[in-house]
Amino acid sequence: MQSYTNIGWIGIGQMGVPMVNRLLDNGIQVGIYNRSPDKTQDLQAKGAKVYASAAELVQAHEVIFLMVSDYAAVCNILNADMQKLLKGKIIVNMSTIAPSENLAVKDLVEAAGGRFAEAPVSGSVGPATNGTLLILFGGDADILEPLQNVFSYLGKKTFHFGAVGKGSGAKLVLNSLLGIFGEAYSEAMLMARQFEIDVDTMIEAVGGSAMDSPMFQTKKSLWKDETFPAAFMLKHASKDLNLACAEIEKAGRKLPAVETTAASYKNAVAAGFGSEDVAGVYLDLKQR
Picture (cartoon, rainbow, N blue to C red):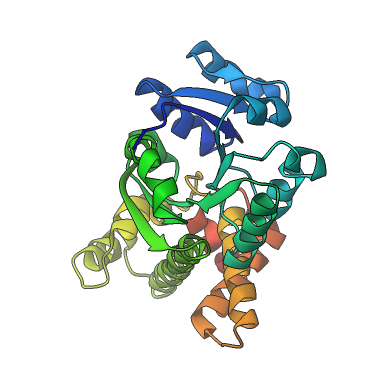
């Protein structure tokens, strides 16, 4: 089975830039489109072909990756005019949207004569830069197989969860855990300060306990210094938690930890901390 070495990519944001860089560095030809053309200049200098419109990019490529902000942005790209161009195309959505939303996009693409798969990622800018993301694939195996070489440059492992909806479901599971851990560690660090415990010693104790985690080790200096430069913005974590809550509600379930954490992150965004790191929910908790 063929492997794709020439793809189209729509969406050059915080994650899109390092991911496309990885592909260019490893010999994949990439055509790119972004609503803000200035974000494409560095990639163009590295060899990416920049298109003036999403429609021109789609016409030129068999496989098109989407890495945009939300469901509304996906629908805006795949508008009625674009749908006329999708026959024979493969759309791979790497954006984080809900399982029910990806299923709706699948129906739209297939009605236009194209094929669709989802491949959201777990990991932030650092793993995107290093090519150590986790690829969470949902879709047909015959779409996945020729894309494995592309995914191999982006991530350390690709999980095929099954049909469309399963990959995005897995992404919401992982990001719900991320949010819950961010909330829990933030509350723990605030509790330590309340008890006037030396923060360095408390961090060392957590790191030596069963409550340690890779996330804690990565972000412990943020809680120590109470500064939160963003690897994964709090507002994006909040969006994903809200998506998870909406899917939970549709299923008629109650998952209190997810729902409570979503409410906390929503408060933090409303308080102006949306551009801080996901661990920056600490700042909002501190002032409550």
